Image (cartoon, rainbow, N blue to C red; front, top):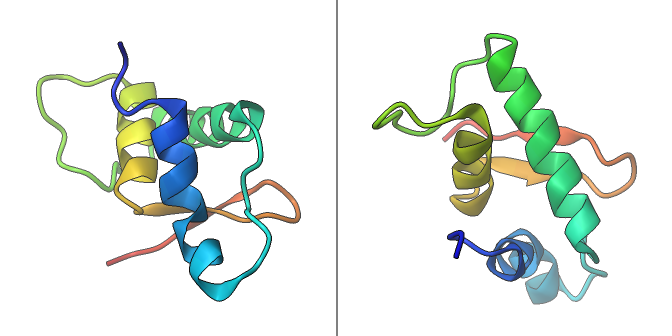
Length: 86
């Protein structure tokens, strides 16, 4: 089994909106897949990963980890990514 699962990713991404009472940003697995794929392509194109690179992780694994740790946010209206720098 892949960790984190898409269900866990959806909960993390939607956690901020549930507190405020807004509609969830992510309603389907498709949104998670598109967001992680976009971020992975950014990493492949030369963007620095926002998580510690360990063990030669692949760009998609890094993108999933960034999303899970809240380093990257999904913007609801146009499905683009907005990076948050800690």
